[in-house]
Image 1: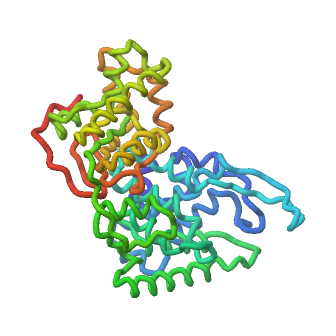
Image 2: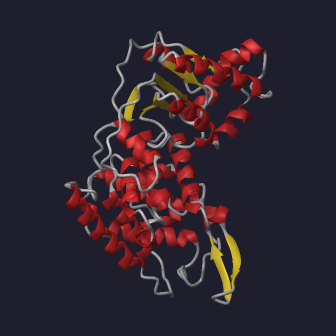
Image 3: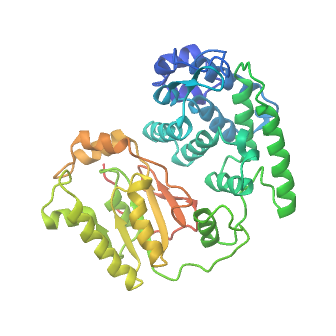
Amino acid sequence: MTWLDHILTGPADPDRLARDFPWAAAMIGCPHDPVYHSEGDPWTHTAMVAAELEAGDGFAGLPEERREILRLAAWFHDVAKPMTTEIVWDEELKRERVRQPGHAPLGAKIAWQALVDAGYDPLRAREIHSLVFWHQRPTHMMDQNNTLSRVIRFGQEVNIACWDDLLRLCAADQAGRISLANDGADLNLEILRMWIEEEARNAGMDLLGEPWRFPSAAARHSFLRGSNTMSPFVAPKDPAGSRMILMSGLPGAGKDTAIARHFPGLPVVSLDDIRADLDIAPTGNQGRVLQAAFEQARVHLRAKQDFVWNATCLSRFARQKITGLARDYDARIEAVSLDVPLTLAKSRNAQRSEPVPDRVIEKLGTKREAIMPDEVHALWTAGPDLNLRPVFGEPVIEAEPCPIPS
């Protein structure tokens, strides 16, 4: 039984899971702050959180898919603590503090990659990514400005889970620790729940159970990209430029085949083709390749010609320049994320006439980051079969199927 099967058939036994969960060994014995986590190391805490989640009011009555997502989020929520641990002297408290700054976003990235590589449903993997990313934030949210903006933002990142689930995970996180400090975290969560309920009534929505209803994809994208003071009721015009479809996936994931199947006839800006034309290896200096690719994109954007951007585009940083250029030309930005396991991408890549070295693909695999709603107007995920499934935005009209790489 794999670690994923063990959790999915849950409730998971911590001792059995520890033998198969790849991150357990580092979590066991990892330092934890003795005041805020006197129960023990992160693995002990995680096991307690998972147990509190199962025992929580109403958990057994949730739909199976939401229980599954929450179980996985509980086991992954502190998975990055060993990689972010630092021990610092706190002059105010006159003691050493154990801190793990940034463990939530790093843990979300680890969870996303691990679940995709394990063959788990990419749509559900996105839910777990968001729950892990956000699990620390609600306890402090009422002390910050623009709380509504943050509430709206999380709601746009999930389709199956909701704010009720995030608060349930946060409550289990608090109950699954022994704290010697009265930090009021439980009370903060209850106040936030009541505040969300009140804001939801004012807006005529159920923000604990559903996302904010934007009038259009353009309105959602504009709000999420704008300042925290921007009103969610603003309805900007739809983009007047071209439509750019951004492909995101490892070498061997099937980007070329997906383009031929779903976007036949559209011009393609392909970094692989440009590299071949310029006789530059994938491991060589990519400056000239990118310069040529952006110039091709500008030609299409100026002409308001729909086109496909075909590159790996695995990280948010790697996507920023081309999506920023498209926004400069008022283009509608769509993305197709080819979420296939690393082993499958390597296998398919090996069948190419000029395969990318495995070590390069493995390094690229560590850079994968889920595409978020503030990056594009619409997103689809495609698994090994290369069929498109909408994540957010309007569904695409598919063309006739093309052969799938073996």
